[in-house]
Length: 481
Image (cartoon, rainbow, N blue to C red; front, side, top):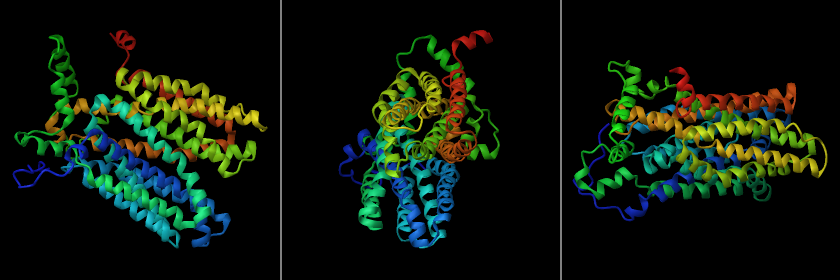
């Protein structure tokens, strides 16, 4: 990959608004809006899909459920399939902005096709494009966040972003249903187009930190603009005499031997996947996604079975689940930055074990049972807020160690977009698997026992997190000695 050219040597003038367009706040806000747009348009379409299939495609109501499930699967499958390639491409381009904009183009195409599509194949193509866009936006967006804020601020930044985008995830299905009922397809998709326009303008104006540095300091033209490596160099100043020895020992642990196979040289993140800490971080992401999609798939049906709720009332039950995430997300992210990912991962999943079991308590009844169900869902929301950041932070920490020990092996940008591509693939796999498994379990063994299985999954993840996330605890290391 050729280095980004020196703009002054090419006769380029400094861009208007360079300071604010390359500021941390603007870049992080742009990524947040991008992720918000992705989730909002996903949620906006979900309540409208049955009407599109019946009114435009002409499907009878009896076939609608299977077609909706197929369209949801097309989205998840595309996200799983295209996440790793998106990461590989992003790490081989000089800037993140171009693929970030291409992802938005795919989302625009998907939205237009969903708006005007008259047959099922067109709708399938639209959902594939939407899933492809999600893969690009989440992969490159998270890599851009890490480039901007550095690993030491990643947890609280991710927590804040996830809190913000949860608003879109919460509001979109309700707005989609209400606007469709009042203004039809034009009103619903017109709102989507307006949000896409704001997203496009923000992405177009972004100037990445490494690009802005070229304008600010001409002397830096031969420098490797990987911010994760520079931060390490700055941190070395002021170390004690023992710390360099420890650092050298750790560097040897993460050193990659020469003569690796061609596929690993082309896609170096594959080498990192043998690390048990990275695999544990991916398990945390998978379990988090599985729990999220389980809530999405089972809360509406359980609310209808217990309380006879309509789709709108069932949608309102997501409020107690999402509000704790909105409030606690940044705080939980800060604790991950301050104390590492292990305490949050272990505490969050351990907390979810009894809380998920408590979901068997609500019974058919009146307000008292509804309040009980909402209270338990709120407790689930607290646990979900705590486990939001550990996976991404731990995975970034592990891969950063390999990058620092082998800078030439991973290239100028490092393997971070590849990492987030793998993370996005695993997360989308959890989103796809959760509804299938939870739906089958609910039908076969009941809602309470289904949540008992989810609690068991959380317990396994908490145990793995205790042993491996952030490194083995001192107690286990001493026993090994």
